[in-house]
Image (cartoon, rainbow, N blue to C red; front, side, top):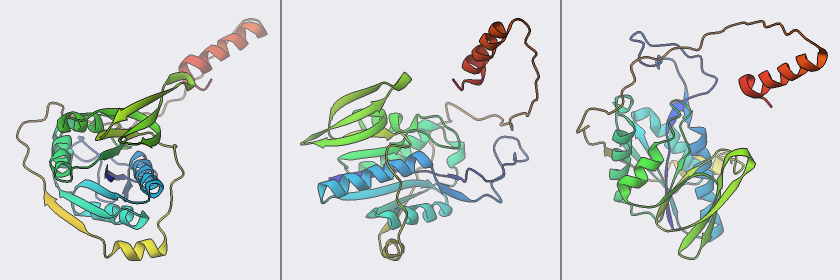
Length: 255
């Protein structure tokens, strides 16, 4: 089985964030980058499926400037067999459809049995690229996947729903799945894996120029405002307790 995993390189979560001078995105000049966390779980799922099957191939695909090759090398060190770097210096100016198109162009040549992506990206969090990619490739898809089981010529997946519910779906292959974080325990790249990654193939392909203006354009970003607020409750102890529980449930959302 050939599995393609589409990954994205994003700023590290604990990196200090500053808004760029034009206000349209963050200042990337002094940031460190890493693999998008949900994509790391997609990669782990692919590697485990290959190990369970005893054969096959895992190919990682990432679009972006030269710096994304470090993330691709990390994926190779963890066990992926090959990597494809889609050279694209204007990734930030393309909308979801534009990014899905360049991914589809590269993945189509591979003719994979299964495509995995993370559920969403840590930077934008739109959760749309995988679904649009499946539509462009004309294959079935399922989202928010916690578990994958191969069944002969198809597969069975476990989807996470609301309020602790799950859905089990059987699907034909080829298919695309967007993987939820937390379904597996992520592995680390071993010293041997890092050494082997240096000799593994990394193909570089050029992204085709954008053929249309993006349907969605990011106009401005803002840092969240820090606010302090005090609210006094009056009434009997039972009434005050009920008001506190209501606030925790519907405003703070911790209950």
